Image (tube, rainbow, N blue to C red):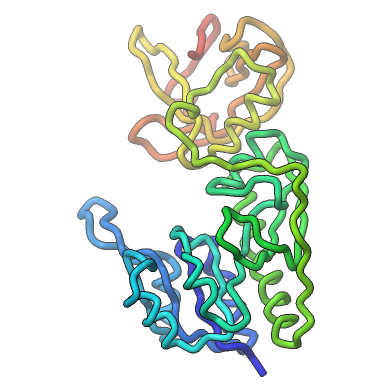
Length: 310
């Protein structure tokens, strides 16, 4: 028989998993998500992507500010769920919540655990120059992404991949993985493996202080830093136009030929020298403007050496 599940998730990344669980006949007793936040020009309350999908599907939605109260625990228990499925929910689940479903709570994590436990695994994998990433289904315990792993899928990270590209590749891969894991759980055949103590790394939340581009690094490291932060929060630098600093985010680039002083513009097509090698900017965004291709930017703001980006 299909499982009765509580689904807990918030952003776009979680939506494919919710839809796949429904499509495969599992009963979603309730969806837990973060509360709507003001956004946009009018600062109207905007429900999370998961909330929008749940309401479209007619699934009850709950947005508690905390799960640590007796009232929250009692409400959670009233759903009589076989298991909980958690995908980028954004809130810590206390042990009492984890222990409530009779089969436990299972998290879809966007890394190859134990590498990149924590908040920003997609960004950190790209920024670190990792050759691969993936998704894992883990039975949750009270540690930070320390639970036993049930299933995994791997994916190659190319230098051309941005965080958005990897996010969009991993989301459907993870949805399929979670459906397979819940099918195995339903049949009593889900096998769990303890995580290794070797190779543990932590994917700390991205801080503003690390978003500025450092041209005094090898070109591939600069490229991976840019792509790991694209499109949000975005890696940025400044260039002087008519003596005034212009701040730009670089969203996409490629390795290029050439050499020069770190940050030097090498040609009229946005090749920039790094400590070793160079990159060519393919897509960028001026402050307060929409993203644009490099060619469109140069038509409005033609650049020629000598010029330095800082």
